[in-house]
Length: 306
Image (cartoon, rainbow, N blue to C red):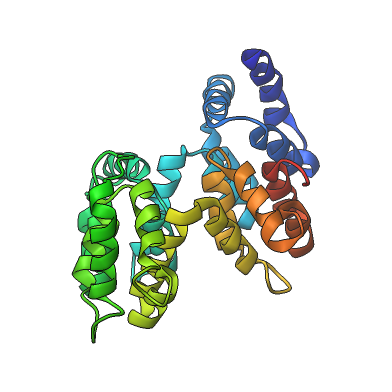
């Protein structure tokens, strides 16, 4: 079945007139999985003797090009490219770097690091360390160095960790950031969910409120991203999409990054959370805040209205 689709797709992709080219590309590539898109690229090259990525770059531009080229990468390759882009050249795009490192699971980061080295011949940790500083750097590196994931809940440590977080922050003058980093980078997600729940019995503020009171800047954003993702990752992405489409026009870079990076991971769940948060579907919101081919490609990836 897959091969039938692919063989039907190739001539259309290769011979279509320019008027319909972008629509054909959107229709074919957004309705396939990454592995099917790779097969299409392989068949395209065999038939046309041209590289499909190069052909796509020549045929597309702007936001549509960014989405389609993103879809031609695996999820880990796309994430690795986004991290590289956030630290390449002068200045750092901290917003992207925080989202990419703090919202990814230990398992995802292990794969991203492997792919990053493959693509750029450099260690991700070294690049991040060279572009950041202070506690912000310490937190990102601690997260990047996490090993294979664990779902262990150490019931004996729940109370101990909750008290340690409270005593390292709200209870004292100044913040013992190192303790926060250790606990949040070395414990499993199910364990931390129970710790944050227990934390409320020590602190007058929940963990997110405590972070806002204790730290500022990139460190605050990083800790908040971590806690939001530990509590409900899909809600975090739904929030980010909502914020990116608050104004008249969308923050295209943010919308593109989330839709492309999560479309084969958990976009359906993000759609559900988005509807809960906004009483309006992600599909409708994209339709209102984008236009043209960029709108068409996002709506196709979104996969339907809720």
